[in-house]
Image (cartoon, rainbow over all chains, first blue to last red; front, side, top):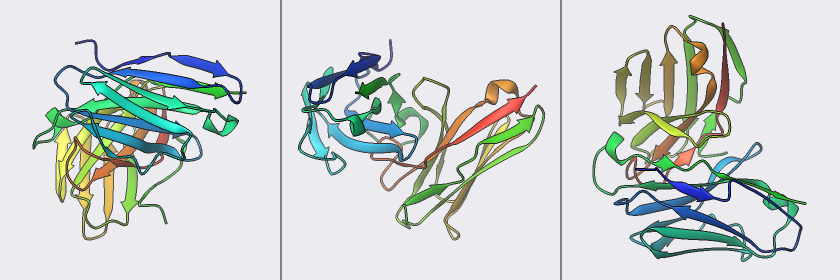
Length: 117
Length: 112
């Protein structure tokens, strides 16, 4: 398995532009998570899905952020309009439901480094 | 007060040293405790997992959980330069696969 695949790896955009981040989870994983990482705040959960359904979006900072999971193999995180304070590394992670420990931990993608100028 | 607090670091030790990394938490409902390791410009990867209180050992790594004190630790014995990374503690109410709350992470550098 290729792991969790995120694209693009780097994105530089101007304030006010729309940004779309993409994620392909591991096949067979039924949970998908979007996190944001900054030096100041660390890793923060934005939203997560179970079986393509959003379960908890309380971490989404504001209405400028939206996320979708149209099928089990694809999710997007969209920021519109983008602002400089959105600059961060955005991680997607997936996991397999069920009881247990290691077998059911997260697998993270390599992240998208977003810079809004 | 944040739910999970982690010593900010950074931490620099000589090769072969014993390293102790710690986190405290405030939510008594946390039952699942993890340590993730993150190399530069990579995503975090699961290193250790513990359910409830107690110790778990895996090679040079030992994870300890003290729920009565709301305190978890990761010990690294005979530290190696390859252990240089950021270490994040993570906790969950309902499982290693569900919603996790992370500490901010501590960056460890092991000097040859």
